[in-house]
Image (cartoon, rainbow, N blue to C red; front, side, top):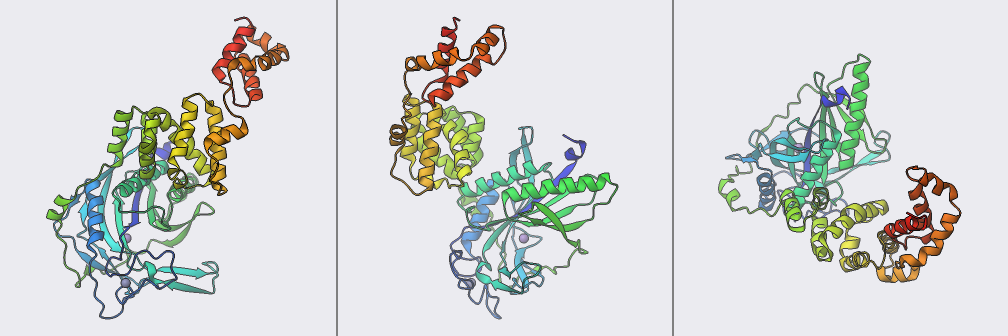
Length: 477
Ligand code: ZN
Ligand code: MN
């Protein structure tokens, strides 16, 4: 690792939409995504004069769950305040948020650093605030003719979580976000599948240089990409003797680049003042009544203990609530083999096709049957992967009729007894005298070359180990 990279300092500010039924200060439904613009609005979330906010208790309950799970310290009195600034998507010209008295402070998230060791990342604070509306630029942002405003999002509850600048690489940042997402999912307060449900601002600097803030990144991958780009940009600038400007930058998701938005304003005066229409919230007793479910780390440890699976597998599987539940649902097919099929094979095949996990979770029995076919040695591991691919391709195309067993039958993938491949082995040996000679001369890999030729011929129906033994036997070893 280059010197500069160990000197990278990253901090994150994460906004997540809390998955409540209604908005933070009114009864409007928060389930707006499938509906026409400006259909989930009322005088409160439209900021009409005289309208009064009423706090959604569920949103606070959700935030308390998060703060408790992240080991935060609860403030005695959480206080809402008005953050004043004008923007077309902010109808009241102020955002109701929390200032000096957030819900909770401190706390931490445990991740793995780039060497795979546990690392504690401290949290500064957690608070709740309202989401503004959404601007829809017609045409490009730079040269659009006009902009539309949709207030359906106005007043959706957000939880804002700020980390201390303790992350040292873009990968660590991504791991922190994954852990956070998993934790929020386990707590049943967040739906990561919802478009725009997470937004991240990332601070990044090199030790001894000014800090740059990248605003409003809306995907996990985007955060890693934006930070990676910034490291290169800042590193080059420093090497050329330039100065890093303290500024805000935007991330261009498609290009994977950042660009200067505006130089850091002289600490914008938001004129925070207490929100007179909402009471302070005292949560001490409330927090006591909140029972937490099993969280990702605890489930990871339990899986390793109860099912004797490797830490890598356990981490991957418990890193996603639905994946963890899916795994536990099929574990009786064989814990270790199921872990390997889920973590090493299934996830990759789903990602490759851009398929949702649900496609498979709703057909868990068929997936189990596939693993059973491999376990019972009806098919080889290799043929099993082939069957999985065909099965997923079918599902992708909307064909849900063919079971794994039927695919095996149709493609003739049943494992055959090693002896039936004897002819192929003999033929392969006959046409590879050179490789045999190389092997006898002690050349590494020569035998594997021959075995590979046979495996290719047998199209995944043979067991590599058996072929290996047969080759060795026929050349007199
Ligand atoms: Zn409303
Ligand atoms: Mn905020």
